[in-house]
Length: 270
Image (cartoon, rainbow, N blue to C red):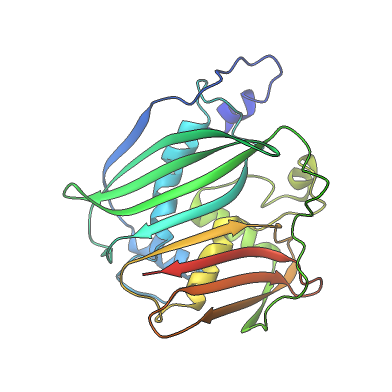
């Protein structure tokens, strides 16, 4: 699939101007508990027999990557920017359950900096959707408005934790997620796409924030995040989370410890 994605970068590779109506499916996906334990270690979750809300994303990733690397997908998958992710965990998922996975693309739309689309993944048990994931990707095709300064923020909230994010985060998350995009694992690969150093996977950042809230979240919830500025490897980040009242929405952020600029802004609602 990575070879197919690389071929898609060749100039003159004809692509349609619309999304395919293809739905890719995988029936009866099972969880390898050793892999689940390794994923939990890399992302900071405790060992448990229930799946973190972000874990089915790695089960759906091969289907999503296959869909986005097809010839009838409107953009090359390499170069798409992951700008947001929304996960609905509709109930706890036991590691022993068999999951029927599906992935499809939806809602190609205009954006001030180009066009964006959603890749929608679901996990079902016995015909019941127990998990739904919407990843929003941006295809940059123009410059941002001069009036908008990406990542600008006057002052970050008081941090609850500081994390040192090392280059191992890029390589280890690539191994457990299957996402071996070189911008996360290679200095040369990162430079080819305009980054001086490798950057952390956005879904690692989201998972790490959820792990910090583990034990304080309801059994079923929706977690939304917007990815702002990439986490350069290595760097130090600050995590902050707040809840206005018991059982109310959680709001959390991830900022650069030195500059104070935001990497991620998210919320959790029951």
